[in-house]
Length: 379
Image (cartoon, rainbow, N blue to C red):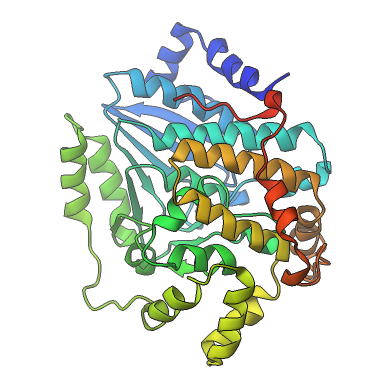
């Protein structure tokens, strides 16, 4: 069955009456809660023991309800949060995909339906606010970064660490990362550098920053709005916006260097420039990049270069092709083995160096899939 039919089936299996019930009461689920409170839709990622990692079941529960809320005049604002204090969403359940091995149906369907959800979240007209306190990585970034508003706290930990597991910064990373200031997005994508607290706001990833102790009050005020257009939502967010005016971005001293070095056209040139720089910081970046999948990094450079010229729909279509090529390769499975299964942190990548990855290999990852396997995103 083509994955698009699966998603169409998701919407069809929800009758009008059942969707109304979803809107009035909590959906009886363990892993994600979908509730309507007043004029607001509240989404709670509810797998705290798994750091609210995103699985296919959660995607399939969220997708039709969010689509319904978008069309309903009763839902004027959507708020998304993670249960517990540790994570908003630590990523997608990639370990489960890897354990099924190359060519699995799950590797096709998970990314397909996840990317459709990313697109819906990125094209909503209903205001959506993501409260991204705690770990926000990978799939959690995809759930939040395409929406209108993202509120970080001092406990927020952001990263796109995919090159370390033989993948690439997907879930629309090719759209939002190249739109950060200068070459910061490419730097974050290649190195998996972690941003914490107010730095997530300073980088442009979060739209607002508030102290963790005030997040419940912010949530309550958003849920209690009687007229929740964008202006009203912005007023509430402005009221709770509390960045420290004396805060200095953790990468402030390196931004100019990042812009210069990571503007090099080829990954090989970036590595040479870091070596020539010779500073402690530059040599640390070289060491970090030396641990990443060479193939993942080279694909990522092209992904962000292309994504800078695309809209979200086009980026997700491109990234679906990439996801399927990585599912057919070896680095993803080796990365998951080394980082999440055996935990020896010593992956044996397909290529021993960046120089071994040919231009033809990279280009092949971007070629269209057979037509019946292409991602079909509703315009």
